[in-house]
Image (cartoon, rainbow, N blue to C red; front, side, top):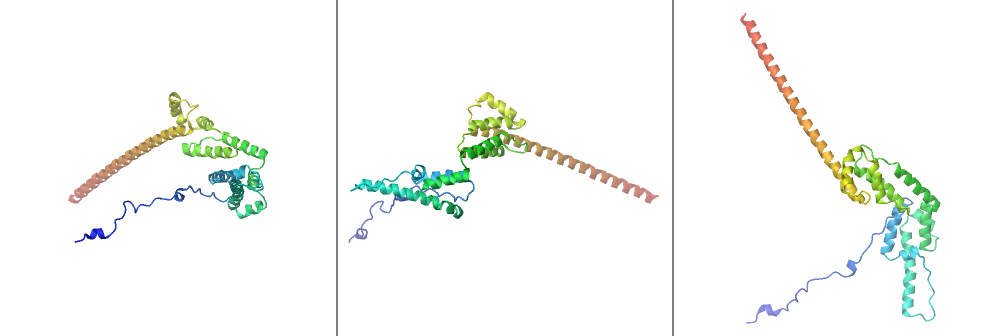
Length: 270
């Protein structure tokens, strides 16, 4: 008798497995938020990264010239000419789609992506002189900062770094080491013991900002835990005193009541 299992062809091993295509592994950068006229520096950083990721930044930064094709061009020359031309149009289209309608009406007549980029930068940041004034004002704001007694290290460092990042976005350098120095001389006295410990164990002129902040935050957390333990202990002691006081009052009331009943009984006997 014929074996029924042999009446059907066998499925090749691993035939059911499928492999992702190269297209599914391709990197797809997220398009930046639309620029509405505010927070230009943040938008510019994101937009620059996006244009670099899609290989269009050269068309914005260099605004290269498209050389006309020679007579009887080669296939390679036609390919390069087309790629460079397409990149310029794509870069311009990306900038058009990354601004609001109000901003678009201001740039719609500009011919190249570089012209659009330069216009938005000048319009938002001003010329070199006005940018220098902005940097000067931000540096002054940085210098007058002091940590408040009610603040945590994270709150204070976030406030400082917000100013520092604005300076950096304007093209000026404000190093992490300068931030460390600023924090060292502007935090409250409660951190003095930790700073002394760090000075003995580490070189504060080369310590990273992250390591420095982590050390201060660790001390701050330990201090809060000790305070919570002290408050909890004080609260328990207070409750125990109150319980004892209530117990004495109840006992006193009971004794007074017994004494009163006894006196009442004696008066009745009379």
